[in-house]
Length: 306
Length: 270
Image (tube, rainbow over all chains, first blue to last red; front, side, top):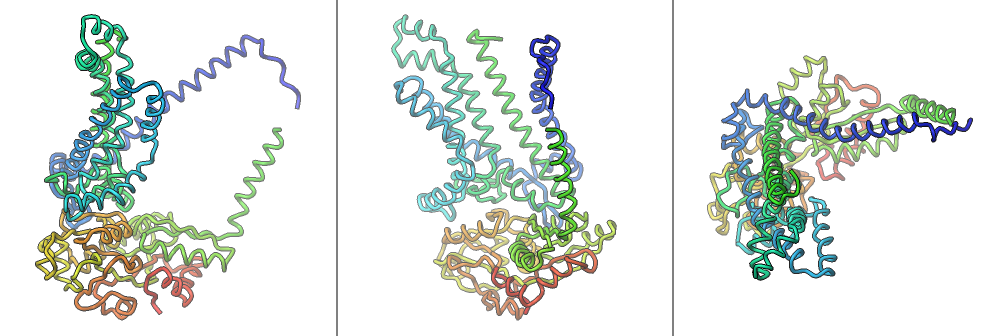
C-alpha cells in the first residue's frame, strides 16, 4: 500500500480536520437531545390512548388498579401516592444525612478525613440498586417486622429508608460543592464583624449556599422517585392508598417494571403503563426545572455569573 | 489492508448464509412457568439433534401468544388456554394456533411453617384473597392479621388462580403483589402470618402447603385431578407442527421428555 503523502502542513487539510471534529462533537452533543425527544414522543404516543379510553381525571384520581380484571379498573391514585410517600420518606432520611455530612466534610473534617470520607460517600452512589434492594429484602424487612411487630416488613418505611440512603451521596456531593462555592470573602467579613464559627455557618454560609443545597436535595429526590428495582423488591407492591409508613405500597415505577413484561402490546393495560411512565416523566421533569431555577438564582445572588 | 477487510467481510457473509443451511431454527417464547420445561427439553433435544437450533425466551403467556400471532416465534409457551380474542386476532393474521398439552401443574396454597392452619376449603381460600376474612383467628388459627401475597396481575399463575379459586372475584387491593414465584416463596418463608400461592415446581421445605377441599397438592393428586387447583401447561404451534417443530414437540411429549418435565418439578402426563 503506498504511503500517504505528507499532508500535515497543508492548511486545507487541517481546516477540514477541524471541521470534521466540530461536526462529530456537535452530533454527539445533540444525540442526547435526539433521544430525549424520541422518548417524549413515544411516551405521548403510547400513553395518551388510555386517557381517551378512561378519561384523564378518572385515570389520575381512580382508586382502583385492576389492569387485567374483566372489566378492568385503571386508577393510579394509589400508585402516585405510593411514589410520593416513599419519596417524602426518603427525603426525611437523605436531607439530614446528606446535608449533615456535607457540612461536616466542609466545615469540620480535616484534610485527611475529607480525603477518606468523600470517596466513601461517593462509593455509595455506585452500588447497583438491586444490591440495595437485596439488602432491604434480606436484612431490613425481617428487622422492621420484629421491631414494629408488623404483619410484614415490606412497607413504605422500608423503601423510604433504602431510597434515602441511595439519595444521600447525590445530596451530599452537590451540597458540598455549593458550600465550597461560597466566596471566602463572605466568611472573612463575618469573622471580621466578630461572629463566631457557629454564627458564621448558620447565618452566612448556609444561607449563601442554600439554593445549591436545595438543588442537591431536589436532584436526590428525583433519583428516589424514579428508582425502580429497590422499591419493586422491598415496598410490598400492594396497590392501596397508604394509611401510614408501616403499610405496603406500590410506587409507579414498580408497577411499570412488574407489569410491562406481560402486558399485551397495544392493549389498554400497555397504554396505561405508558401513561404512568408519562406522568412519572412529567414529575421528574418538574423536579429538574425547579432545581435549575433555584441554582440559577443562587449564581445570581453570589454574583458568579448570569 | 483493504483486500483483507473485503475478504473478512465475504467470510462473515458466507458464514451467515451457511449456518441456516445446517441448522433449522425454532423459536419458543412465552410463559415463565413453562420456561424451565422449554429450556431443559430444548437443551437435551439439541444434544440429540445437532441440526436443530432452538432458542427459548420468557416474557409471559400473553407475550408468547402475541408473538405466535405476529409470526415472531414458532411455538408459544402458555400456562393458560388461549383466549377467544387471541384466536380471532390469529385468524385475522392468517395464523392457526394448535394446542399441545406438555405437562400438568398444581398451584399450591402455602403458608409459613409456623402457621397451625393445615387445611382450607376453596371458599375459605377465596375469602382470604378477597379480604373478607382478614384474621387467622377467624379460621381457627392463632390471632394475627393475614398477610395476603399474590402474583402480579399479568402472570399466568395469577390468571389460573383467579379462575380456579377466585372465580372471577378480585384479589384485595392490599395484597402484596410479587413479580415471581421465588419472591412469593421468599416472603412466605420470612413472614409468619403470610399466605400465598406458588406453582408446584416452586415448593420447598421452607413453605407449608395447605390442603384444599381436603386434598394435599402433590404429583399424584394433580395427575388424578383430585387436587382442585390444577392446570395444564401448553405449547401452541402455528397449524399442524412440521419439520423440526414437530420433532421437538413429539420429543417433549415422549416418555423421555416427560421425565425431564418431572425433573423440573412439574407433573408429567405419563
